[in-house]
Length: 448
Image (cartoon, rainbow, N blue to C red; front, side):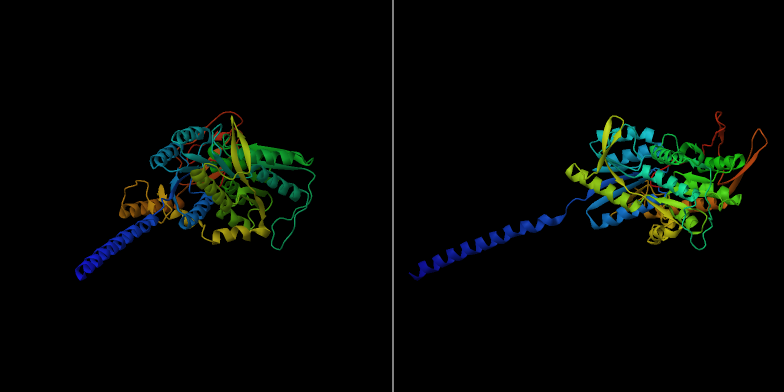
């Protein structure tokens, strides 16, 4: 009897231990599940990281990427369409789930969009909209409103309706007639076109507007803009100069300062970059249209993430683009005068400074999740630092070296333009007296 009881107890004990061990092993499996969720891979191809607006866009997106499960690959086309095509190929090879695209050349952008869509990757246009391309989304500032606000500011000033503050250079009185020069970017740039068209239309609605001259500048070239302003000053000084981007505005301000006319000719531009903000604060510039790069960044990233995960996104309207209607979100813009310049200064004081874009000027590819890669992809940190130092040395050399260009027209008029760096090539084209200079050109308009 005692032997049977001992055997029964032993069997029960073995069964209990087996159940206990099996149960414990079963509980280990759920602990392995929360290992990791793969980060959403987003690619961003920008026309140029030299634009202050793009520096701010990158800063905002990177800050969000650190908090969310997002991996952003940044590529800088450096205003070269051929480089942007290579960048898109790189992003496709990396199998990103969505691409935010700011095209260098809107006419060539359609080919890039076709490549992206064929790879079954979502594509969102940022500021620039490739013509007749089937984008999944488009995020941009309200360019039409930007043009209207610029023109309305000029009209108020010409009508003597400005608000005067201490230290203001402008002391306007109502004018019976006035002339306006509009510096427009590349003819193929739809952003520049929208801004210039809206400004022109608003100005011409006023009976006191004597003349509105709209001057196009291939590739948005600032050097050509300087020539345009020089010529305008020699023929008949305009009362106001409007610019569709800040690079063109900076070119105009330089010419006006040389002729001591910066306090007599109104200047208004679109962008809100750091250099123009300083000019506005110092009274060398009169008003700026802020395109709100922080909001552009936030909504563009929202669109990319939603499309990557849900195949849809929260857009506001649809914009006709050739044969396609593009889901879009248009960001409101605001007019900033010297009285409100602190709003722009606060932006650049928060870290979106010009120095930020010089940290890695030769860098083509950066991972926003605390990892950064140089354009070679496989270069080590020593090579990367060497590339940075070499590029910074080149930048410093460019700042120190300037070329003075003297132009004499057939009727004996002389124009002098000071150009940073060396001039490689100048081309003259007949027709309307316009000249085309192809060195160092950059696209007009956009989140610059």
